[in-house]
Amino acid sequence: MSYLVLARKYRPRNFEALVGQEHVVQALANALTQQRLHHAYLFTGTRGVGKTTVSRILAKSLNCTGADGQGGITATPCGVCAACTDIDSGRFVDYVELDAASNRGVEEITQLLDQAVYKPVLGRFKVYMIDEVHMLSNHAFNAMLKTLEEPPDYLKFVLATTDPQKVPPTVLSRCLQFNLRPMAPQTVQSHLVTVLGEEGIAAEAGALRLIARAAHGSMRDALSLADQAIAFGAGTLTEAGVRQMLGAVDRSHALRLVEALAARDGAALVSVVDGLRALGLSAGGTLEELAALAQQMALAQAVPHALDSQDPLTPDVVRLSALMAPDETQLLYGIVLHGRAEIDLAPDEYSGLVMVLLRMLAFAPASGAELRVSPAAGPKAVPTVAPASATGARPASGECDGSAAPKAAERAATARVVAAQPEPPPWLDLPPQGPFDAEPLIASERISVPPASTAPASAGLQRTPLGDRWELHVRTLLEQGSITAMARELALQAECIAIDGTRWQLRVERESLRAPAQRDRLQAALREALGEPVMLQVELGATNDTPARREAAEREGRQQEAQKVIQDDPLVQALLRQYGTARIVPGSVKPH
Image (cartoon, rainbow, N blue to C red):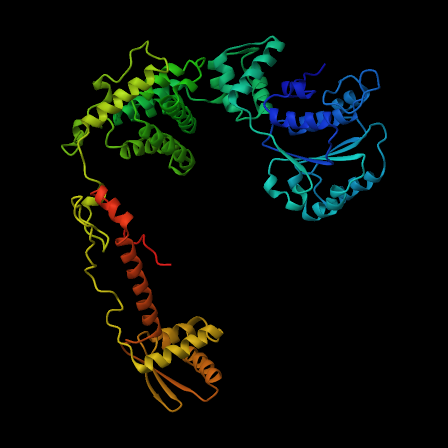
């Protein structure tokens, strides 16, 4: 007899056996019990979370006749009647599963819908299950819309997809949508314990924990990995064997890396990476372990009672969480996540890993422990703060409970604050950048912001009557859309210096604007707007009163007015008085 893989052998046959999707089970069970049946259901979710399984259970619930042949629609299919057994074995004539990934054309859908006019042969309902429905072509979707909206009473549609964003809204609006969530590692691990117990296979808790994490929320992936681990370990699942099979990095390496980061010990970091290289362990796997460890550390610092007491890593997590401030832990987590995305761009993965770790040292908060460097580094390496461990913040070896962890973390944070040398905010080291750089004043003084030292670009603008006339004509042409592209640029950048009958004399500063093509287009637009002959002459020279400069002057005036409104605002004045080193960021004020 051929071997049946665990994912198929332990596929749930009823809603009670379905794990991790209680919200879907509750909704469907209540609908079946109350006979409030919709004609179309859409199940979404990543691979291996139970979309096809739920579809088959729903089909059995609709067609189950009970063990005595007298049953009706039920939320608890018997599993022994002809309909239940045939659906489980895939030979029930009134339950049709269509793979849209390989049958995505309008011909396949039309052929399926042509059979919808016929009543069920054996069952109570016909059930059409279309898997990966997002793969259907637009013509196929359009072909099924009418039937999907108003199917016969005996026809039910069940659609499944891993990418609901690709399903047209016209289809989504005709279905009840259920999102099957990825399963938590604890749920997957618990189910693996049950399955392997029934199989009589010994498994270490650490091995199952690794498999549950590697499954990434997919129960099918977890059972497939369990099959692989059983074969790898010759019928026994050990943590070391599963770790070797998955290529996962041992937790001890991640622990040593975090200890080195907490101590600001660059040499220790490089040493650990060299050890990983010697063992041939994955740099990506190392970053994944670091991310998981940083997440647990952040949890220990914020909600220590949420830690898994059964996890053997918990004591180490509690110990390490006391060595780093919460902001450092968050920084570590963020840098590691970004590093995972960038490591493929590095010359090799180990140099990429080193750069990610060195980035953590480079951007660590100033309140962290001192950076240890070799003597060859020279006198420039000045320690800023003593290591947190020197303050007594490291808990005793037996102090691993949740209450001790926050106390130790609080003592470490207090010691770092006391030891840290006060440093001015970074913006105080910068030269003045504009009218918003305010000097710190005492609370009784009114905040005043000095004016800008540099004159605006439009300060030399001198308006002329010819400039008024030229601007009026240019605005008219722009509103009518008569000029575009370079002709528009010529009109805005030109200064009208003389009008003699039909001859208009313009001056521009850029040689490229004197091209005959631009001049002719602008000339033709003026003739049409004025209804009289116009002859344009364009010369090269310095300009003053142009429409573009007038617009810049108006814009600058609005900007200065907006800045004055912000400077005189009572709330802004109060904030600047309260925080002596505060300033209004240059360029952050925008007029309406």
